[in-house]
Image (cartoon, rainbow, N blue to C red):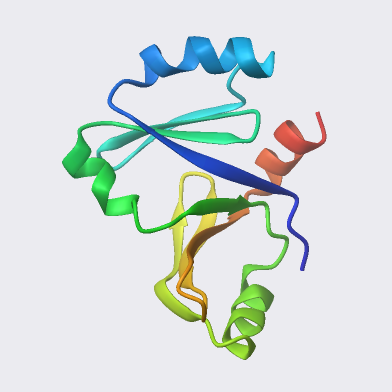
Length: 126
């Protein structure tokens, strides 16, 4: 099991308003942009920007980080369980691949995502 990228989560009301500053600070353009349920997301540099009304964003605020491109989400679950973590959202399919949420034994909650092979190729190996 390998983690290839971790994102710090940034919360905003308006994605289009948030991105210009991040583009300037990172020197990059968003490498991923999509809608998921009621929120809009953009990944730029090592930030995952989550935008939308506060009530809609609150559904995802329990996680302190997003860890992407795990090469084996199933192996991760075994590792998390052996470390005393609790899966709070079981492995589920989404627009970027499979994901789950886990609360670590210390109380930190993290979203883990196993990207599709196409995203790995297009984003990490571009």
